[in-house]
Image 1 (cartoon, rainbow over the protein chains, first blue to last red):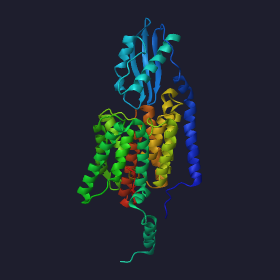
Image 2: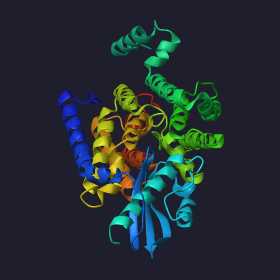
Image 3: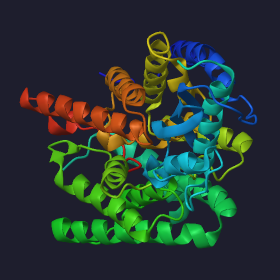
Image 4: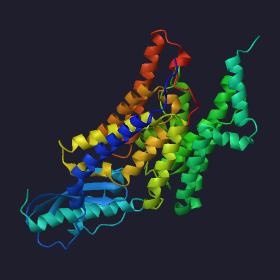
Length: 136
Length: 299
C-alpha cells in the first residue's frame, strides 16, 4: 500500500484557511492591547499614591514593570513581566535606579540595550497611569 | 542473485536523476544539502548586517564542534570517515538562534550537547530529540544564554525577513515531505494563543501574533520542526505530532513565556513521537518501518 506523505490540494487549502482563522482571531483579539502598548511617553509629574503597572516593547519582546507610589514618591519598583528573548537578569539592577532617580531615566545596560529601553518605557507607562488616575 | 525488475528500474531512475551531476549539485539536490544552502543564505543575510567579526567566531565554534563530535562518533562506531552533514546543519541552526556576541563556549556547548544527546538518547528507530533544540534549551538553562534567532529576525530588514524565512521554510518542508507537520504545528500554536485571549489578559499574548515572535515561529516551523529523524513520516501521524508540538509551544508561551517556548514545544513533540515509535516496535512493528528516517533530514 502506498502511503501518502504530501497533502492534496483541498487538504492544503483547508489547512491554510484554518491557519488564517487561528492566527486572525488572536491578532484581532490582541489589537487593543497592542495599541495600549504603543502609548507615547509623556512627562511625569506629581504621582498619586498606589500601585501601577506598565509595559514597554522592544524588537526582542516586552517587559512589564510595577511601580508603587507613596506620598507622591516612587518607593518600590519591580520587573513583573519578562517576555523578551533575553533573560531579564541582565537588567535586574535597573529597578533600583528608578527609585534613586524618581523617574524612568535609567542607564542603558551594555549588551541589553533593547531590554533596558523596554524597561524604561514600561516605567514611563506605569508613571503615566500614576499621574492621571487614582491607584488601583 | 537476480535483482527484481522494479528495483532495477528504481536504481536506473536514480542514476538518471543524479548520476550525471557534479558532486556539489548532487549535494544541493538532497534534503540536507537544500537545508544547508537555505541556512547559509539566512546566515549571509544576517551576517551582512551584524558584521563578519560578530558572526564568524560563533559559527566557526559551532561548526568545528559539530565536525569533531560527529566525525569522532562515526569513526568510532562505523570505522569510516564521513562528512558530518547533519551535524553541520545542527551547528548552523545553533548559530542562527544564539545571539551574536555570546561567548564562543555557548555555541560549543549547545552544539556538543545536542549532538552528544543525538548519539546517546536513541530508540531503535533513531534519535529521540532534535539536537539543535535540545542543545539550545540546555544552554539557555545552564548559561542563561541569550537567544534572539538573529539569522531569521533581528539582523534582516523586517520587510524582507518574513518572505525569506517563509519561502525558505516552505521549500524545506515540501522537500522533506513535512508540510502537514508544519501546518498542524502553526495552527495548533496559534489556536492555543487565540483561545488564551478569552481567558487571560490579551496584553500578555500580543507578542505571539506580531514581529519578532512571528518570524521565530516561522523559522522554527520551517527548519527545526521539520527534522525528519525526530518526526513521523506518515501524513496522519505528522498532523498529530504537529498538534502536540504546536500546542505545547503555545502552552509554554502562555504559562512560562521566555525565549525558548518554541524549542520546549518541539522537545515535547519529539518525546511523544519517540514514545509512539517505541510502542509500535514493542507491538511487533518493523524498526525500519516505524522509523522517521525515511528520508535523510536536516538536523
